[in-house]
Image (tube, rainbow, N blue to C red; front, side, top):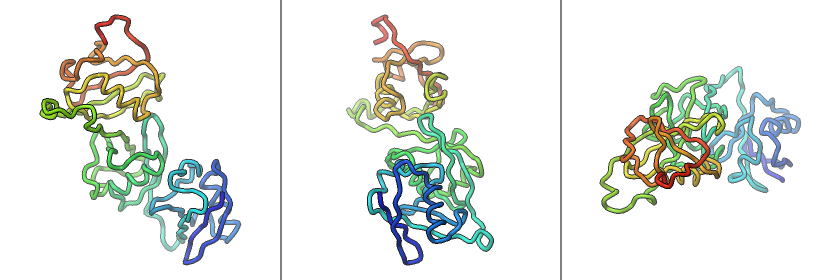
Length: 254
């Protein structure tokens, strides 16, 4: 498809493929107008395109005749303030560059482009701590070079909307998958304590965090009952739920 590279008040067309890496686009630009790859920064809607990704990863934002902004940086005169961090979501891990002035909100914008996740339902964690207000700088949470940020999706009220449930407290816990699922990913979650195990499972399946299949949930070495609440199982803040593929034949667990 054809896109337009916009830089210094000018734009020029370039043909690209859906599976073409961003670094290959930069190589074409270098051949076309002579700007070295290391001096190029490509961005869309203010968010930088990551070298290791392909154009298809941005298909929600980049289509035929889209405009891509090209910034040119002299690496000697103006050294970069960027540094790499690792972002993990649903077992997928990718390295991205962020700036020292990065806010929580601008980091979420970059993650939105990479994973296609709604910003309003996104929560970010680093070293077990949730990144707070969107306007805060990520450095306030100890994020530096090679830090790891974990992404998980907030629950919505669609599962629990009646008056009695609305008075229940929220609890934060972690769902950890077995080694055969998502490379043993840890997925932080927050739900009302009156949510059932089935609610947890449906949220993970609906958000494509777990592939469609049958699963067992274990809490404190006990198989959890799908129709029972988290409160009934004694799940508290900071607890771990372990998920494995499989079913239980005894009806009482359903």
